[in-house]
Length: 327
Ligand code: AOF
Ligand code: ZN
Image (cartoon, rainbow, N blue to C red; front, side, top):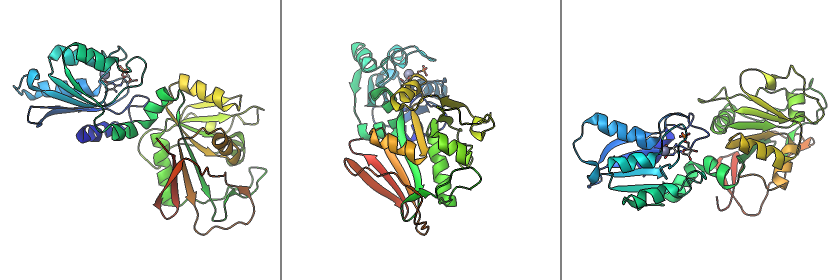
């Protein structure tokens, strides 16, 4: 299963909103005969890729002596691909070992049921926590019917996000270092969407692209209830898609993102938008960059960090990650 997780990760920047899935075929002694993974959205699922590689290898071991290991329940529905369950049954594979269930209502337990009804031995929930952690964004979309939400901000040593600015002629305060900037761009690559409030667009005119890590640019998301965003704003450039909402109601926005299958968003500011996500309890992770030196004495206060039901990890001296307990 650990090998499946490693293989699954190879699809990290190319499969969203699909899950990352890896599969291995092993013989009765547990020796790996073939491997596969889901490489790109819309392309072959991990199980099919693995079986194709096994057949290409010319190995003469019969399927009836093979076990397929896969980190997600094999699908039972027709999407871009035919159901993996049908392929597994058709080949006569003896046993299937699964990491975690697929919450997609088109699958949701029906995959395992179909395999069992065909007389295949099924073992499930193997390394379940690790399998769920890998696909936390995909799982969240179906389990919570909203994207996985990561809030992110940088603050001064004395707890401010920025100086008070009223127009775009004043440059924003720079707190990030080259290293943390790269970490943030990695987060942009890992999330399907990036969201900021109206003030951030008007005052900072950010591009919100991923230029310091591999992978895609996220879909840019903002709110403009009073038509304050200029048509020349950099967020509206053709480099990446942009969604502009005319409502600031978070449940309405999140429901629309769910419909669009945007499984994850990174909220990068400003303070009012971040605080409204925190107040509504709408977050899964919070990343905070704390400057070791910068003191400004007055400015825009950083949001209040929730202290209940969360655990905190320090990546290095000044990068703090807060996660909700039980995730
Ligand atoms: C699997 N193996 O490797 C993946 C699965 O449109 P499709 O056909 O690609 O189906 C996408 C759905 O299939 C996705 O939402 C998830 O439920 C499942 N993904 N299943 O058996 C895989 N990527
Ligand atoms: Zn499948």
